[in-house]
Every structure is written in structure tokens, then in C-alpha cells.
Image (cartoon, rainbow, N blue to C red; front, top):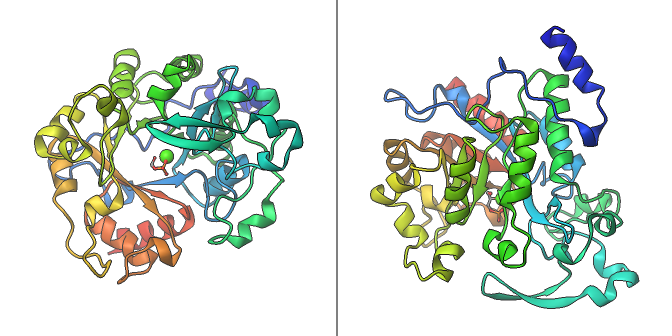
Length: 368
Ligand code: G3P
Ligand code: CA
């Protein structure tokens, strides 16, 4: 069977059972190695646009429709945050507490599931994915998380289900075939220490899915993110896919802090810390303010040395999160100005809620 025939056949496979591999000839945007001449970039058009929770500026986040729109808008990568159901299925939600992103609070049949838990040292009250089977969770419908900021998105409230990781992967595969572009997937493991502590380790089903797909080598169209360190180091022992060490401008990885390890995110982004990260990760995923610090007037100016330091360590850099709305932006630029400043700073990728704008800014940057 020719490659083309195989791809056509794969396109006919029902969504939930798809297990095709992306064509080997297709370039993946996640694994290009940094070069001395142009660290981490290859060329200017090589900047990777990562649709943050889908095209979440335009649709309720973490829905198949948000991901589908992101792909239409030209995103290279779709990003699901992953949490577990009670029956150990990975689903896409930003948090395991789902009152802000689903209609669960309006469902009388689940009223008694409301509870308070301590997640990563913080008391949280609401409804939690780990208390719902997948079948129960599928009866819920997604709602816009930021209705005040994105009132237009509330038009879609109640229309869409919570997708599984497998469904998101299947979408990326079928859309790769349909569009002829490689649509990669960049899942983030949410609260891995917490989920392991309740017997719902995230790594196990994640690796099972990667193995089923044949996505275990460095050229696979996937990269796995975490704000924690230990689960990435463990993944590095099990699979060769690119890994993304996320960092915050403040605080420390929860796994390290809870184990008494004094290292903070600030330690991870020193030149020595970055060299350690590069032992297991391909990408660094810093908060955008770590690349473009803001002054007292909330304005951006000269970039920090972080991108250069990360490139020197052999890491690529994808910053989060670019959002078009005024309250998320520096005081002295609009979203296109912020994207241009990030590209000028040398980032290799951006997580964007409006992927269409990041694609447009990238094209403009390539022309300059
Ligand atoms: O994964 C990149 C970015 O999404 C990290 O922050 O909270 O939006 O998942 P968060
Ligand atoms: Ca994320």
C-alpha cells in the first residue's frame, strides 16, 4: 500500500480508534535542533505557533471546536492541559476543578460531588474531574471561563463536550492529513504530584497513548509540558519525545517544594539551571514576562537574557501566554507589538489564545 493510500485509509478510521502515525516525511515543528548560527530557530518562519487550549480567544477553551478553529487559523501545534477522570482517562481541562469551565454547578444530579480539596498546597472548593467517570463527565458541557473578558464566546456555552486526549490526538492526525500540514500536539500534565498521590498517575496513560500511536521518538509530532520537574525527568527515561519545562516568574515547582528541594523557578532559569533542564527537556516554556520584563508602568522594554541563555544551553524557547485583550498586555504595545517584541527577542514559539494573530505577526516578522 502506498503512503498516500495508507493516509486515505487512516482518514476513514472513526475518531476514537485512530492510531495512525503522522507521515515520516512531514516536518514537525517541535524538534528542530538549535544551530550555532541561528540558535533554536532554523529560520524566521520556523517560529512555532501553539494554540493555547485551542483558539481559546474565540471559543470556550479545551473543546474540539476550539482546536479545530485553531488549526484553520494556521496554528502549528494544539495545546491541551491534561487531568484525569475517576476511571483514569486523560481529558482536557485547565484545572481538575471544573466549575469555571463546565456547567457542572447547574447539574442537580452532581450537587453532592461539590467538595473542598487541597491541590498543590492550596484549598480549592468545587467539582473535580477525578470524582467523575468519563461517562459522567461527558454529560457536562463546556462554558467560557472568562465570560466578562470574552462575552462573545458565551454564545457557545452548553454546546461542546469535554474532549479526551485521544480525541484531540485523533483530530490532529485527521487534520494533518486533510491540510497536508503536520499538526502537532503539546499536552501539559496538570498537577502530576497530586494525581499520583490519589492513584491516578498521569504518566501511565499518557505513555500508553504515545506508545499506541508510535509517538515515542524525538521526531514524533508531540511534546509534553510540565511545571513540575520530576515527572519530566521520569518521562525522559521512558520516551524520547521532546519535553517542555515550564517556568513561572515566581514560585517553585510543586514536586520539588513538597519534597524539600529548595530550588525555585528562578534557579531553573539561571545558566547553570538551564543546562540541567537541557539534560531532559528540549524546550523551555517561560512566562512571557521572564523574556520581556515589565517596568513600574507595566511597559516592556529590552528583553532579558533568558532566550540567549536558554539557546546557549541548547534549549528552544516557547513563551506563554499571548492574549489580545488589553488587560493581558503591556501598557505600551498592542498584541501585535507584543508578538513582534517576542519574535525580536528570539523566541522559537508562542502560546497564543488568538493563533490567527500570532500567525499574522510571524508572517510580518519573516518579511522584516
Ligand atoms: O502550558 C503553557 C501555559 O499554558 C501554562 O500556563 O496555566 O495556561 O496552563 P497555563
Ligand atoms: Ca498549559
